[in-house]
Amino acid sequence: MRNVVFWVLCMGVALVSWRFLIAGVELTMPTVAYHATLRPLAFFTHVGLAPVALALVPFQLWRGLRDRHRAIHRLLGRVYGVAVLLSGLGGLWLALTTTAGPVAAAGFALLAVLWVATTAAGIRSAMAGNLAGHRVWMIRSIALTLAAVTLRLYLPVSMVAGLEFAGAYSAIAWLCWVPNLLIAEFLIGRRSRLAAVQ
Image (cartoon, rainbow, N blue to C red):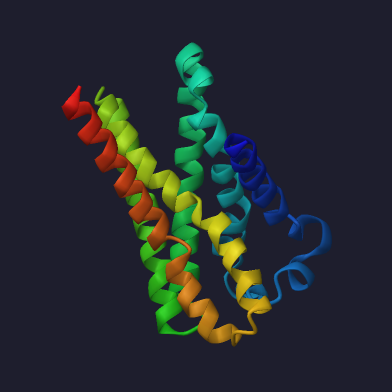
């Protein structure tokens, strides 16, 4: 059941993220539509490619695919890496030029930097043949990719709770990824402890 929910969240958020292709940016993303006008390359690179990375997450975690079809896993990993690199750079530029205030800007900028850095470290480990290091770095990368999901869970919750948007958005700029990364570190630590016991 957890796997089904995970697939639905990843694929659902990825598909919904492309809603601007049908209804336009002004209608579907009014709070960030100014980016599309002022810095279209960064904006469309980010909103176009981040969903690609998110949609690939369940496939990259699928053990059966990874074990039986390594060539496909590597190919999808390369696509994931390029999507994260370009989307992360676009996201960094958007964060640095946001009108949402310095707290939100810092949260999203650090997310972008860590997203690109952890993914690059994971790919570098794989290319060096360090599969254990690759897994560890990709757990971190995926935790940061999942910020797209947690962001979209927190936003409606903050609205239902009646929180003022500006303050809630600044908090969510951090909450959408810091807990994810802490959970990833917990899982990495637990895996290391279990390996040490065995």
